[in-house]
Length: 333
Ligand SMILES: Nc1nc2c(c(=O)[nH]1)N[C@H]1C(S)=C(S)[C@@H](COP(=O)(O)O)O[C@H]1N2
Ligand SMILES: [Mo]
Image 1 (cartoon, rainbow, N blue to C red):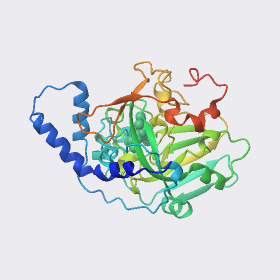
Image 2: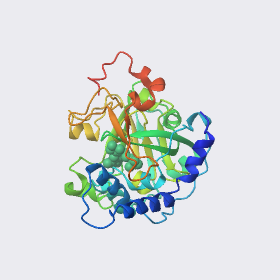
Image 3: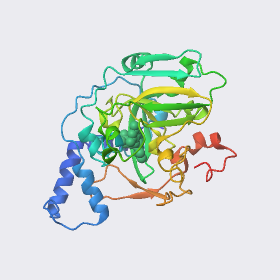
Image 4: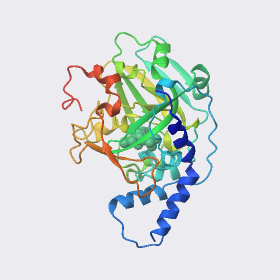
């Protein structure tokens, strides 16, 4: 799908600055910029979005990349300021605005990634080497959080499959395990359960080998044409667009090929609420809320609070449904 003229116009119009001022103007007109105004919960969510916005330039370097037509989805993008300001990253706190504030000091360079386990050629590469070895592509993907909000993000990355091919998985390898940096000095949530929500750290995730090899599965080094910001998982994170966002693990230091299903952080924390597969599925509700629809964090202003139906496999069913043929997706949620 190529970008239409309308997509280009949409993109050009929705600069972070324009959006920010527009929202302030609306808030002012409504008298909501003073303290104490009473707001509906949904409007409050919009206000929280506003106040979680990082205002200053962040020094992210541009990354050269191709724009393959197949991945330029004609979807309204979530503005960059919202992608940078509304995050889940419990290593830096549980509030949506915490990572943008608390992660800025994270040292992301130099950074090494080790790929080992059941492979013929284990390998350690720096992120700089990864960037040299693999050509980056821009891929516009939907991101659907298990909390029932969604974004559309232009990632920069390469297919994880390319990296897996390099290390040559052994026939006994059936799963891939991922691990975030463990450094409680830099990641305060790892040192304090009050900040980090009591998860077991380092954050770990996993995929079946065929999921990891699927062409949609991306190792991302950037978004919106530039390096990842710390709050989005710099310097290197996973993106698996048909699964709930918690599968897309940030700040990866190790990828291990293994024989059996590896433990994953959220399914360990609450096994009845978060499964290993975590495929986006409108028909299987979270025990505490419906997954039938989602709140769109899109280009709209404060008062444009939209919900849309959740799509099976987050809209990627044509590409990935075959991976799960014959599986009961209620059981393997
Ligand atoms: N290490 C780590 N990775 C993580 C998380 C986290 O808390 N720690 N949160 C996950 C969740 S729940 C989501 S929705 C996405 C959010 O990515 P974003 O903040 O870049 O939008 O990151 C995922 N990756
Ligand atoms: Mo999430």
